[in-house]
Length: 186
Length: 222
Image 1 (cartoon, rainbow over the protein chains, first blue to last red):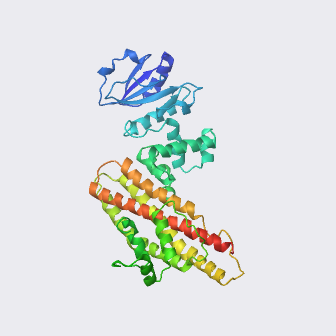
Image 2: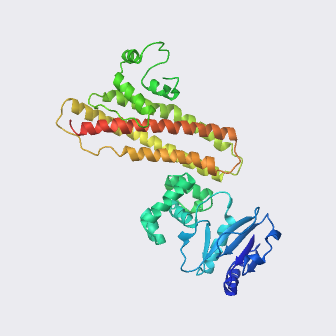
Image 3: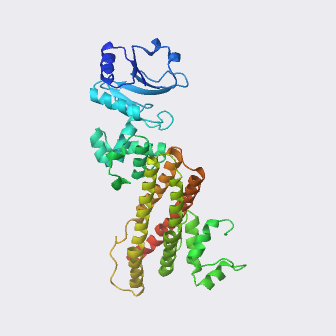
């Protein structure tokens, strides 16, 4: 896996780099701007994890890029439309480790799900069996927001029932089968 | 009619009507089978047309015939259709060469769905239908012991959730199952689910749009 950390501040880049160095098999590129990398020279057969606060992803065709947004403290994950992953700048090193474990496990990243970050979070809670109210309380949002997200999820995935969503979550590594009591939900 | 709507073939069978009726009219076929033609047409319409609502009153609808029809349908599902689809599912699942944990998940999901469906059908058979027949009898004999409301679970919601789950299974297989299984086994299974889902939906509509209004009419006492 190749990790590109793009942020204007050295201190942020050093911090993230230190947190993820524990994982092996990572090649880390730490830059203040993506333009200083000659993208064409990157291998196309390896997964590229691109951490940046900037919008969009400027990679040419053919690269396996997973974009991870670097969110400032006042930014809301709900506003992210086109990325599944985010890292808050106030994240702990455990959060960072967890993120990278998820990234390494995730398969079919780019072709499948079009779900946003928030939608995946909510899908996870639905699959774990929480009610709308419980999800709202857990994520500090309103029930109405939860319901809206669920409608969007159903529309995007074409899956309506809770059991169906649970199966989807497991198939796509959003949940591990060990996290739920299979007898209950499926 | 059969030409244009071959999906009505099983419906005819559930009325006990055999093929080979030659040139006979609907009226004649009904007469021969001892079936109320008005009722017969209502069922056919409800089955075939999602928008159909019975216009007239339910006053003279033959409750026993309706229950008998529904029981025939359930027998068809329990004795024929569900086992048939389970067999297709087994063939599909065992055709998977991949180390099947994904396939196993789908297998479990489907099995549980079938379990719940069978339970629901049995509840209708053992609890709901006898209650309705009793209600009807009381009503006919102008028995002043009126029924309590709300004895019947909310069928609409229950049926809707069964429909959703079956279609979810179909979608999960079509969209999200990674490769490694026999495509013919898969397609045959999917086509069978598709047909079954449609039949279930149409059957549920008869329960929702004819049976339940009849019950309300009877529970209302008039």
